[in-house]
Length: 296
Image (cartoon, rainbow, N blue to C red; front, side, top):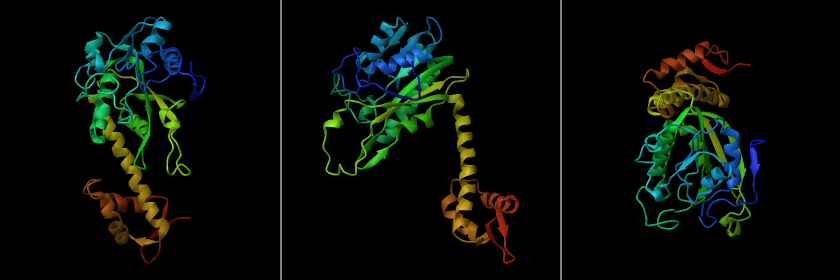
């Protein structure tokens, strides 16, 4: 059971196939089960069992478990998970590919598969990630939890924060964020030309969500859009204040400076909103010459 929001397991334990690349330690799955499996005989699910680690942990704890994978014929991008299960899951564990960090079909198992998320380009991976999370959310019972273990990666010097992407895409309520320290990675043995300036990624995130409502993930999309709009309202107001940190401006100068940034991102009557904000907010004062500046 998790004691804090940071965990570390130097050994992977006696769970699953240790030759299956990308397997995580069974100890984090065990802590996840023990922390969030709160209903006797509730169904525990893993739609991407990989090398079987989650199955072995469930067997050890004597939990009712159902697992499957693309290499077993179940496709999280095509098949409805709830229909496959036959009943809502009490708890779902998911450890997806970290984009193309490891290629699975054709290397870890079988032949190359066009539905394998690890073979997608980045836009395709993001779309597949959202479909999968929605499918998992809808297969979870009301009040049940699902946990997604995701790591980040670098490609050609760029940092891809995939764990934050999971947090933005999931329709459930985020209840916990567990930082898992990584051990015994293949990259640990690699030498890099710019090793002196390279900060190695040595953590993954387990993001735990609760399904609170009966509504499907699709019906929750308007609420997600509403949250985005509310965030935009905060961002544009902060941008106005940022412009005035540099120098005082007239209303006209502010609108001109703001227009390239806001074009297509706000309603067409955005100048009215800006003018209202300038005239009513406590953060601004105005000179006799009509220039706005940040109030003391």
